[in-house]
Length: 232
View: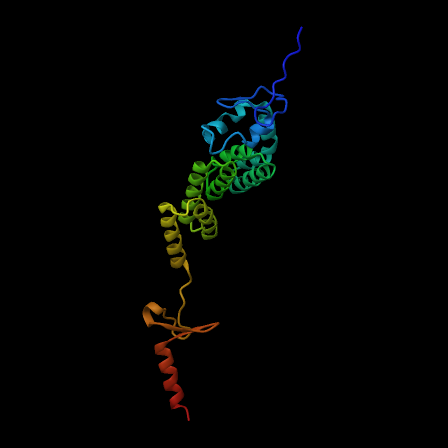
């Protein structure tokens, strides 16, 4: 009998140990499947379509994912949602460092199901999609992250995500509007300076004369000058 023909990965050329067939791409080995190197701006596949089917395609992915998120899932079951979310993000970033971006996105998709603030999850999703050259998805993830960060007054995260967005789409009107909202909320949240002597703010007392440790209003300056003039 003739030897069976070896099936090779259409991405890296290595022997495909699993029969992982991606629609429109062909046979893909587990590592290339987890990396997502077959995606990008030239691909007709949607990132969400591939991620949804990742577990169905590869038993290797199933096993690796189950082992890696076991502790995070346990935290989620114990309703330690913030801790679980942080664990999922840490796991995802480790996969990204290892070049397994699609596996990272799969982990982050699990994190999105947890109750609570998801801005950092969307930020990490945006970074993973951007590294795969999935520009449309990256922009959408980052916009969602910035909106959630601004809404929750997480200014540091908002600044970080908007910087990524402005680099990706410098002329985007949505990003410009979000930048304006972030600046406005930061300004409104800034501590209001008041006169060290009477306690009134600039809104009540007029412009304040500020020093390194204190400020004084014009009215208190006049009163202090008057007191000084009465002292002999």
